[in-house]
Image (cartoon, rainbow, N blue to C red):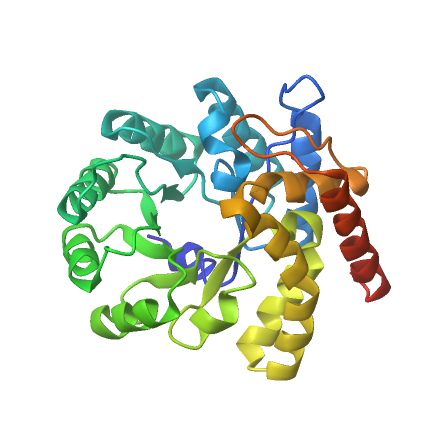
Length: 301
């Protein structure tokens, strides 16, 4: 695995939205412009087909097209498509990612009502071992996944190069990093900017972001402040970002995608349409986004 590609994970990983028109059809021209804007700003990693991309609401053909458009528009940014579903489908997606020329794939937390931790390990191991030339970042959302489970995977799958940890428990994360080793893989906060400082202090060296679709410079400046250990600047930028992220997290993250798309719509970049089952915004929520964007503009973002 190219070390330069892996090192890109020690930064901001953009999770793209997938713009739709009013009828709900993908707006690929708008999507290309969105990816291009982030790449031009210097975002190191761009992930099409993440959760904020409405991964589970896209067809397989749309999944393919999102990857292709991202690769075309990403410039020097590393492209890391999301893959998932059942084992056979995930293997097939991994093969498609490799054919695309991407070096990394983000493997979604499996969606299953009866999963066990050994089953989680088996799922990830089978998919990663089927594509040994592809680097994998695992999306961990299950608090039961512990250091032993991760160490077992790392031992059997050297192509697992990163963990996107999205359990809102920095203490648990710290214990896992300490046990497994902070340098064993790249550890990233998978809960975006609002949680990043808590995870950064105990082993994370990167974070995922939806904000970066809307304000690339804001996320990149935040990363720079975290890297520099500039606590005052981190607090300043955290205060700008937190209201936006709180809106996305409300009602069990029902508005995660809609908030980002509404902000982009207010910037004239894409339509705010989301697909079911994602939540749609009230007029009050849209007004709150207007206030947040105004504040960002007034502070240089």
